[in-house]
Image (cartoon, rainbow, N blue to C red; front, side):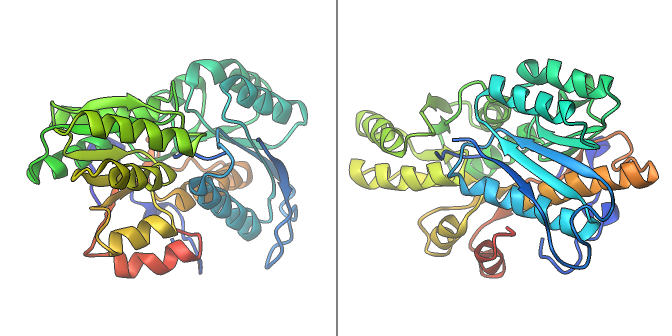
Length: 330
């Protein structure tokens, strides 16, 4: 695992024990679920209700892992979890406001579009509802009023990926941005470009797989100097594989994030590596941190972000990690 910006690093092991459970992409309608976990602690046995709000595009396997982590934490802590999502920033803000209006005890939310969510987050903090950020918004969470943050430093992650492919000889990578306005995705591509100046960004519609394939195929057919494709989510990597084959391109593929198919493609040598931000841990830690804050006043991270990545997954460690992807925890 590669970490930098030492002032930001807090070891996950010192934060919380994940117990018996082992340890952002294109996809396809919003959901609003209330999860009642069964097990050692019945849902609600703690007396706390936590709203968990994301910018998930339904169908993206990345969010299955985030949600699974949040659900497991709710089960372990006896928290009632209310999960909702919408990829539209304005609608995500409405979901946060709905949580405030329903008087939940805490809110965990992604902050991928900080300006659009600022008003709703302020409404929560004005109501004395603690908010924690996760997954996106590492540079903005404090100014929005969130108490804690769990996720990857996307600039560092992009730099790490860029340095690795630069060492391998990359000259003209194509960085595929699949969600307009996402500060996290733009930070990843900027990090790659800082290490490989010839990096070019391309915007695609991550909610439409066929459109992603055709856009990338056209670009690869037109520009044979592209030697690497950097996708920023696992489903987009699957689209890129199809585009590479259709265009007859020899460009190599690297991606951010994991699912079972991507892990198998790494094992098969079709993808060079993945930069994993460990989404299951993000969901788990966000819920558990709110439980500890509500129960005991704990501040996890001591005022600094808790980093869950970047972590490289490649041919050297894929055999160990592949089984966890099948259980939806990695």
